[in-house]
Image (cartoon, helix red, strand yellow):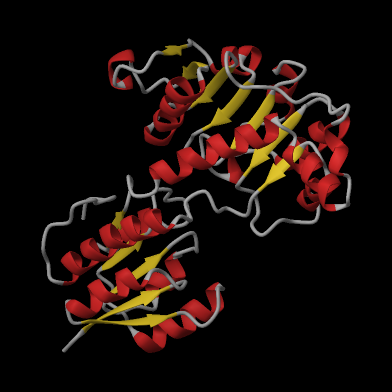
Length: 322
C-alpha cells in the first residue's frame, strides 16, 4: 500500500517527483483555507503533510488517523502547531538553509530600492515623467552607510556579507544568542542592546523568529529612535511588528521609509493597504524566498525528509523530538 502526502499549496514538481519515486502518492489542496484542509484531510487520510506558509493546525492533525509527519518548505515554523504535533508523536521537519540566500538577496534589493525611492520613481516614469530624475531628492548611495541587524542568524549573516563585501557598508548587530566567534569572521560590530541598533543605523533590518516573546515587539517606540532619514526593512515575519503603528509612522513622517516583504495579516488588511499609496515604501508580496533555486532546494530537503518519515528512517532536519 502506498503512502500518501498532502500539499496545503501547490509546490515544486521536484517534490512530487521525489514522492512518486518513493511510492508516495500526492494530493494538492483545492483551496487555501482551514475548512477545506480539514475536509480533504479527513477524506484523504495522508501519512504526511507538506506546507509552505499555510497553517497546519491542531484541528488539521486531529482528523488524520495515520499522520506521521509535517514538513515545512522553508525555515519559519510559526504556521505549524509544533507542540500539538509533538504531543501526537508527529515528526516535524523543515528546510532551514534552502531559502537563506534568496531571502538575503531580497533584503539587499529592498534596501537598494528604498534608498533610490523606487516606488516614487517607478510611478512617475510609468505616468510619462521621464525627467523625474531632474530635482530628485532624498536618494542615497549605500556605500559607507550603516546597516543595523536585529537578529544575527543565518539569513542575517548572509545579508551582512553581501553588504560588507559587495556594497562597502558598515554593519552593526544585536543578538543575545550570538557571539563574535559565531559570526564566521564577518566584521559585524555586536552591540549590547537592540536600542543601539535602532538609534545608530541608516538601515535597520529585523531577522527574528516569530514567537510569543517576539510577537508585536516592534512599533512606534523603535521608529521614533531611528535617525531622521533611516529606513526600516522586514523580510522576516509581519507579526513581529505592530503594523498599525508602522503605518502611522510612515504617514506622519516619524519613519522616513520602509521596504517590506511580510505583513500581518496576509494578505494585507485594510489598514495596511494604505501603504500601497505611499511613495516612501517598497512592498513585495512575501516573495523573498520565491526563487527557482530556493523552491527546488527547500522542496528537495523537505520531501526527502518526509519520505524518510514514511519509511521510519532518520531525518536530516528535524524540528521536534518524538
